[in-house]
Image (tube, rainbow, N blue to C red; front, side, top):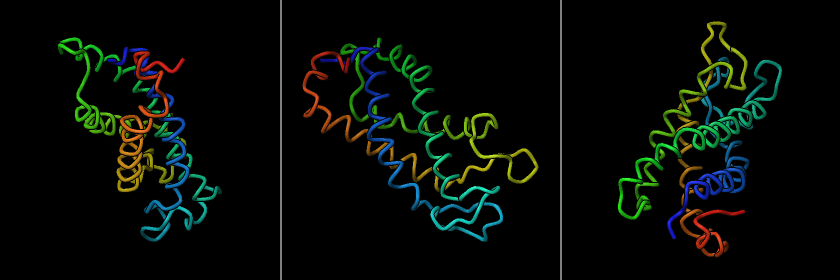
Length: 172
């Protein structure tokens, strides 16, 4: 059955905060981050203190802020846009391959939203009001999290949640 609008939002929230959160929790300590004043790229779990906090704690704050931003912004902005575009298609749904490529606009907007100071959990590090977002670490984390959640939504979720498939993607 074709997922309905509410089903797409419920699925996005469920997958992001279960599979996405677990993946983010596991992968964040191993991100290569070039933090200001740290002397080059280091794994997140080896970073020295950043503004009095553990470097790993700051990496987790930034990683989970990105996960929350992509979920909330996706539900409020991207899903209505996708839903409107899908109304022009006969079957009212994207092919799975199109769903996969939603990573590009959502990744770019999440990255830009992390640069807005009140959405970035890290304090101003340089004194020039520019927010610190490690670009390579962000690209790796966002892309790998997207792939893991997309694979789960298009594979095991269809097996383990049989009612989900026949209820238009709604979980409750």
